[in-house]
Length: 119
Image 1 (cartoon, rainbow, N blue to C red):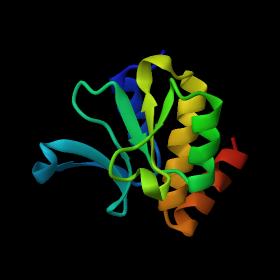
Image 2 (cartoon, rainbow, N blue to C red):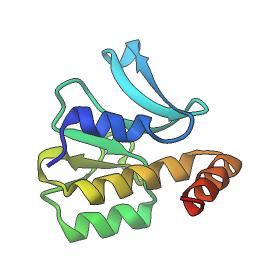
Image 3 (cartoon, rainbow, N blue to C red):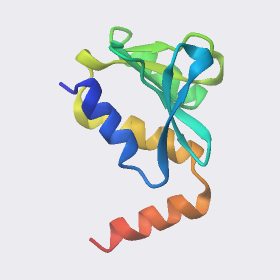
């Protein structure tokens, strides 16, 4: 089971990912690539909010509504809330990477993929 610290580490491990605290959101930490948000993780929060497509959101909600929820405010755009204590660590890592891929510039994603192929 992942912890909030491991979720934060997963997001910050991605190329050009940065944590940006939004004061007007109650000091909410957001995770961004080139100032575009791909995730949110509140202090002590039970969930992580991740960017996803509407189709992915629908599939996850159908798959396991106890683990995946439509995110408040952003849910209509496909964003999902993932219950940290209930999600598999490997699946969460994949969802975080997918959120980052939806946000990162194509060149950054291509460079990331090229580095992976050479390992």
